[in-house]
Length: 133
Image (tube, rainbow, N blue to C red; front, side, top):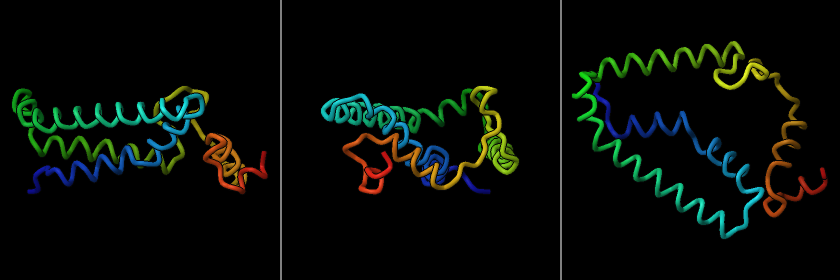
């Protein structure tokens, strides 16, 4: 039997949330904000994430005992969730969101690169993006 450790939780969290998703959200928010405001946004969001992580890390055992949740039931529930998510990815079904984007088509590589490049603020663009304006 394996217990849930800090390293397994970190790896799972890193795989599910992941830096690319966070960076894309940050890039979207940074389009309309000044650099000083971006630094404040980064600092506040990092502090909030650290506080929430610490509170959850220290209260997880108490909450699991309060609701009589075992390690095995959490592992089973996590496995079922990951399995459903994996099947949806294989079948091309978008879980969550609106019905308009229930099935996402695969864009061409050049369209994807141009779209991604245009979402970044102009001061962050690399030279290939400047030619695609």
